[in-house]
Amino acid sequence: MKDDELKYKTARGSLIMGAVTMLFRPINIIGALFLMRLLNPEDFGAVALALILLTTSSLFSALGLETAIIQSSHDNRKIAFPSFVITMGFATILFLILNTNILTFARLLGDEEIVPILRWLSLLILIDAAYAIPAALTRKQLMFGKVGIAGMLYRITYTTMTLTLAFLGYGVWSLVYANLISSLIHTVAYFWLSPGWDWIIPRRWDMKVVRDLLRFGIQSTFSTVLHYLHTHVDDWLVGRYLGKQALGYYSKAYDFSNNTVIQISDNVVGIVFLPSYTQMQHDPDKLTRAYLKSVQLVLLIVVPLAFGVLAIAPEMVWVLWGAKWAPMIPIMQIFALLLLTRPIASNTIPLFQALGKPDYNTRNGLVLLVIMIPLVLLFLSQGIAIVAIAIVISHFIGAVYNMYQVNTILPGSSKLTIRAILPPILSGFLMMLVVFAVKAPVQQLIGGQYNFLGLFLLIGIGGVVFLPFSYLTQKELIMEIWNTALSVIGKRFSFIKKTTPSEAV
Image 1: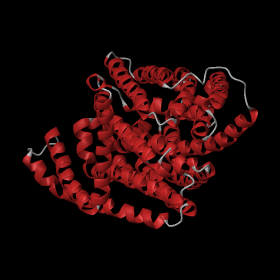
Image 2: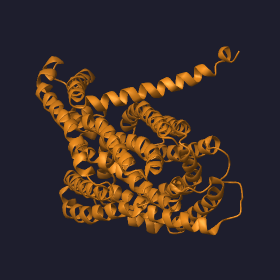
Image 3: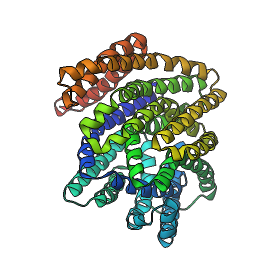
Image 4: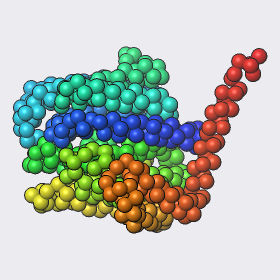
C-alpha cells in the first residue's frame, strides 16, 4: 500500500471510529444517568463482579488469533477457517468448565448469590468468540466504516435494552439481558458486514501456518489477559473483600472518569493504528512519527477530560446522579489522574503487536501486577479511595516503563514523547485552576444550589480556557489534524461526485 493511501485510510479510520465513539458516548452517558437513578450500586457491582471472570475467559478463548490474523501476511483464505474453528472449540471448552464448576467460581469472586448471573452471562464466552475472527478480517482490510456500524448497533441495543428493562422493573437482570442481546447483535453484525465468508468455508489446513498463528496469538493472549487483569484485579479485590456496593461505586467512578477515553483509544488507536503500524513496521522513522502523532491525538482528548473531571466531579455527581452516588466523588477525582497515562498505554499495545513483539506487552503487564497487587492489598482495608490512589501510582510507573521499552525499539522516542506531553498538560492545568477559581461566583450566580445551569457554565468556562491555549501551544498539530480531516472529507465527497448518475450520463 502506498504511503498516501495508507495515511488516508488511517486518517479516515480514525475519523470514523472517533466520530462513532464521540457520537454514542454522550448517548450512553445520558442512558446511564437514568439507569443509575433506576438501579442501585449493588446491581452494578454484581454484574461487574461476574464480568471480571467472563471477560477474562473470553480473552483466553480467542487465543490471540484475531491479533495474529491482522499481523499475518498470509492469505486470509488460508488462515480464517482454522482460526475460527480453534477459537470456537476453545471457547466451548471454557464455557463447559465454567458451568460445571460455577459455584466454585462464584466463591472465588466472593459472592455465591451471583451464580444465576454467572450462568446466564457465561453465554458471552461463545457469543464473543463467534465474532472475533470476522472482526479481525474486517479490521485487517481497514474497513473501519463497517467496524463503526457494528459498534453503533451494539451501543444502541445495549442502551435501549437496559433502560427499557430497568424501567419495567427487571432490576439487575436488565443489565444481564442487555449484555447478552447487544453482544448477539454485535456478532450478527460482523457476520453480515465482514467481507466474504472465509471463516466458515471449510478449507484444508496448512499446519505450519496454523502453528505460526498460534505461536504469535498465544504470546499476544498472555499480554492481553495481563492487561485486562491489571485493569480489573482491583475490581475483584474490592468486590470480594469490600462487597458489591463498594464495587458499584468503584466501578462506576472508573467508568465515568476513564471509559470514554478507553473507548476512544481502543476504537481509534487499537483498531485503526494496529493494522497501520503493521504496514510501517520496516520504516522506523515513519513509525516513530506515527506513534508520536497518535500519542498527541489521544492527549488532546485525555487532558481536558482528566483535569475537567478533577475540577467538577462533585457538581457532576450531585446534578446527574443524586445523593446516593455521592460516595464515588473522591474516587472519580482520583481516577481522573489515571487518564494521563492513557496516551502511552493506548499506543504501546498496538505498536508492540504490530512489530511482532507481544512479549513487550507481557513484560509491562507483569511489572504493573507486581507493583499493583501488593499496593492494593496493603491499602484495601483503608477503603476504595485509597485503593484508587494505589492504582494510579501503579499505572504511572507502568507508563514510564513502557516509554523505556518503546525507546529501545525507536531510539529517541522517550524525549520526543515528553515534549509532546508537556503543552497539553499545561493547558489542562490552567483550565482546572480557572474552573476552581470561578466555582464560588458561579454558585452564587445560580442561587447557591448545584444544578444543570451551573454545571454547563463550568464546562463552558473550562472549554473557553483550554481550546485557545491549546491552539497557541499546539498549533501545528491541530492544523495538521484539521487539514487531514478536510482532505479525507474532500476525497469522500469527490468519490461521491464522480459516481453520481448525472456524471455517469
